[in-house]
Length: 166
Image (cartoon, rainbow, N blue to C red; front, side, top):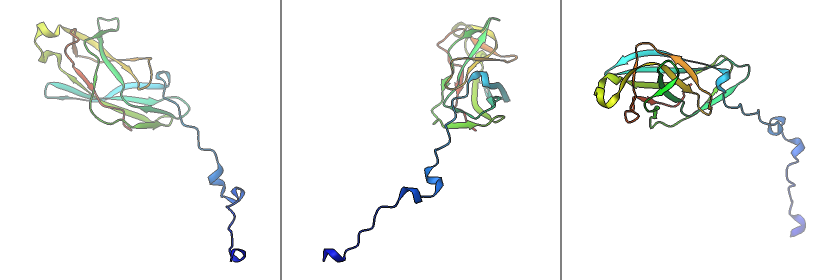
């Protein structure tokens, strides 16, 4: 009969453990260019190209995140003028990298040697270095590179970039 059935009331939320009711930690924001030390490391030659890691070190005082691909181009003529096409993104999935102060993320960059191309199609010029935009930012940093050339032609893609990794 209905009189013998027992209803169990829903759990009282006030009796749940405190870990269930604490607010989650705020999500760190995107690392701004101004809060990063940007450089290159692990430069090595490969057949017809140079490989290196772009480094993004959090020199701020709080955690921040990088996600995706940096923007990269060769620059020259002593005034920061872009040489040729910007880096193409390699077909690799991106992940979010959280950087605590002092932590570094890297992105692998390949630079095909401009000397591999016919002079007429390339427009060979010496490069001063790299213009690097961290993922999610529109402010660039300049990193000087020695003994590297670029192509004036935007039809020749010398740079390819992978997403940032821890």
